[in-house]
Length: 69
Image (cartoon, rainbow, N blue to C red):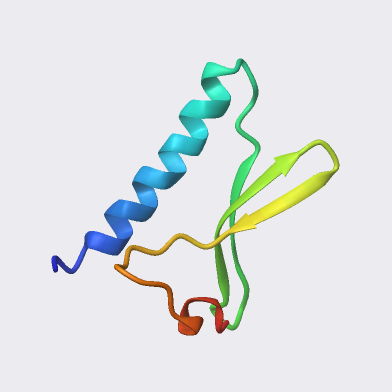
């Protein structure tokens, strides 16, 4: 369990979203969000008039703590 595992995995996922849109000839329209309280969304994808939020985690199993904040 390397200490950078989560950050590297998150970076890989975001790059895959970027590559997918680029290969379709579309602009990325990908964003990151963090507020003053340090709540964050790892990836926000804009599709037309809709926004889709993604939380990226590297783990063997899902836990409710992942979506706590």
